[in-house]
Length: 573
Ligand code: ATP
Ligand code: MG
Image (cartoon, rainbow, N blue to C red):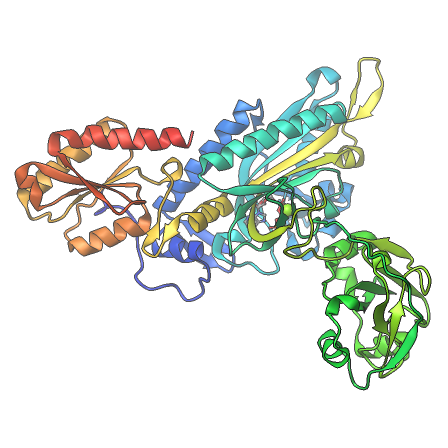
């Protein structure tokens, strides 16, 4: 392809609303443009990268015996009403009506559509197991679309669904997808962690997320270098250490106007881990008091799961409600003597603590030497805390580390939730009718592209891994008015094309600096520069990922470039 003809509108300036490197670079390198909030269009270079990632995904899905299909993006409401998800999705679902006033949505995910296909076409155990997948556009009206294609409202997903006769079969399908995902992300040149995730609202058993480690990731991950344990924040646990201390006499202390943990630490000169804080919530109309150690945070997703309610059903209580429940000003809540119907949820660590301090439910007072069991009991004792760096690994006890991650893939054992709701059954060998056991498996294609850029860039631009680069090589004649440079460049370009490499030639009549900057910005892995030394029969080869330049004879150039490209492709295959 000739750069003089390629639609590659690179930008000098950083676009105003782009906050993270991948978003900035996808715009600057002319891979895509924004059409509306969370909606993007892809230009030729961007489209080629998407295609490369899709092709890797396809090859690895096919390798595990999964079969590609294509479902519709437009889905009749009835299907989602059968599983109850027409309402569950809420405002995230793009809903619309046809000319006859029938309800439809633009598919946010396709469990219902695949299960519908299978309930109609699969009747016997002989047709199982089955793994079907598609690569297709999904629509979600995200509350906060941001970071470019990381979280957009229209995006391409590879979604796969497995159908098995029993749970053992599902385990096998799940493991196949696990293997396929590892190969896919390896081939994309990504460094990632596979973490245990919260099955949450999807309902099901095992759930694992593939997380690309990156400071711009929205997810928080706890992981252990010693034993390999890794879990996302909503799932991560830690070892609880018990304190063997004698229980002391309970004691009320005067703490005038001392409301926050920081103020208490200052006032009583004791470490925050000696306090237990009480947070009052409104949970689906009821009052909940949640207790965690003073130096910890409550993980609201864990709390939601414990209470069995949804995100929109939980909120922190406002001042008047806190005062009503505690009979004190805000800042003095505690577990002893709360008024009215209050569900007490106690973090699993609290029963192991000794002689801690809590609010007294009386303005300006706290209580010292409180102990769980002796002084109060919870309605629910469960893990509701966020783990922090240095907490001990639940498996091996080593200190946990915390990192941020971008969720690029998600694999999930659904069980029979959808097959039961939609009546997808099969008859087994004995003629009994049974629900099909399902799994679902997603990869965000655009988000994967963005994640690759997050891990492969420098201040000059993108550094594509060879496997996903839009082109392998860029041939740059430094000065196109120099007839010799131009001719040699054209010759090398054509030979590389004959060798079936993907090649760009920068035949534009612009300054050398512009050419080099653009080549660096768009991140083509190999650059062949034809400059003044061509008079001595020499051209330069430079890898985008390295500083050094290799000089080769003109006749050697094609062979050497081909060797480099093939080697790099092999490393990522
Ligand atoms: P998240 O927690 O990031 O919102 P999710 O749990 O809603 O993701 P899934 O329903 O599991 O995502 O979708 C499968 C994959 O699709 C995700 O792993 C992610 O790579 C991708 N994905 C999901 N939502 C978006 C989005 N708004 N923009 C781009 N990719 C997305
Ligand atoms: Mg997820």
